[in-house]
Length: 560
Image (cartoon, rainbow, N blue to C red; front, side, top):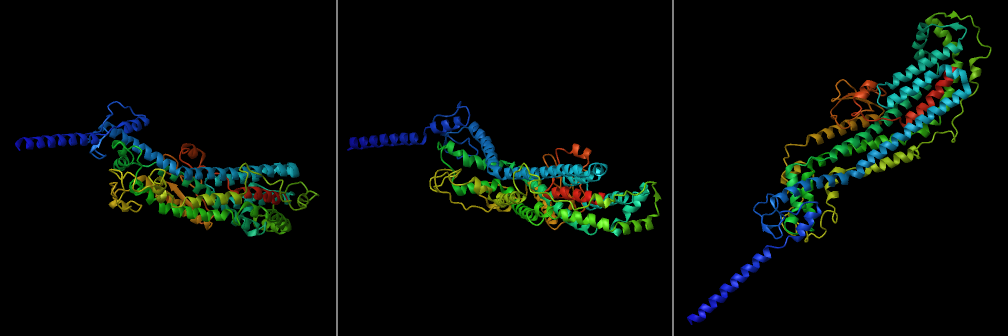
């Protein structure tokens, strides 16, 4: 009996030893898959274990049996940060490219349209009026120059600029209509003072000014909005990855390597919690971003509505003819009133030309024919261009709050099978609930330890930049402009040609103004000093129209 009992004990002991040995072997699995995946990342395999080792040294990944050393975990931490930055960059590339490409196309469209308009105008008037036009061309060249300067962000008050144009035009035409008299500069200055009172050009200046100011404000502000959208998107896409986010990313993306399961993708909801924690501040931008997009769409409606170039250019020839005819019809009364208020001028000793000035403009200016309308490199019309931009803007709404969804799309970064995915410690279903987006909602995030009391400064600055631009766009929609100053440029005022590029802050001081007053100080010296800070600005649709029509009308009025 005793011998039998000893034999049974021996067999049990042997079985126990074999079982323990087998269990140890099953736990200490091969790390060949992990080594291969780690090497594919470009990392050296020196000191990378061939078999699983005890993981007490790990600070992020589970501390059971592991294929990772402390050095490997540190490198995977760095890799997680870079990969996350690339994910955000890639996910936002289409949206950011949209702002860049549409701004460029919109800009080129109006710039070339304006240039072609100016060339066509000069060519036509040189052929038609020859010396008379050449003697007075600076009046119209100055008009083009000021229109361009306004659009590109110069310190130009449109109302004052147009008033000055009409005053100069009146001076020139008054001399031509009264060539038998000699006028000093002081006398001509006196003449210009009575422009509003005399109304020599009828109601044309008032009507044109109303259309021009509203059109220019809309176009210039819209282009600025495209630039602001681009700059904000570029800045926000460069994420500030906090240490807690890096740890969560490493645990999600690379801890499967340490468990010798490098091909295992994270669970979908698990990815959502990590990304909503890491992108909490970006999500807070979304509300102001959506308001900005809505305001851009409002102004876009102005551009492809009654203020588009086709609908404005068509009646310009009639307005020009009316202005010229009105000046001709009122020339006697205008001259008499001026002589009464400014005094009788001295005779010039040269008799009035037998051929009256009215004979020079014996007919209305003929409008451009379709063949003479300038064409643009953009190869499109204003309607098609604006509609395209509006569609792209609509697609960008809710972009920042949807960014975690885009990154965690099933089959892309995450596993579509909720039971065969990495759940932060092993293969299996992820049970925690998905938190809502936004900084304050991360207080209960199970994956990322986010300090909700410390919002990201850069994001807050971009929120303010969007708020500023949205306010400006809403005013532009109503025909008003806003003066604002970039606080990073002490003493400089930034108009619609201004904005922030790399290196400047986005804090602005607002001063509301009535349309069409614009306070945009952009002197040559200032522009050179702030070349890295200013937004580029180009002529607008209506700028083009104006450039096309005002000079024409001015020319006729002046020489009649």
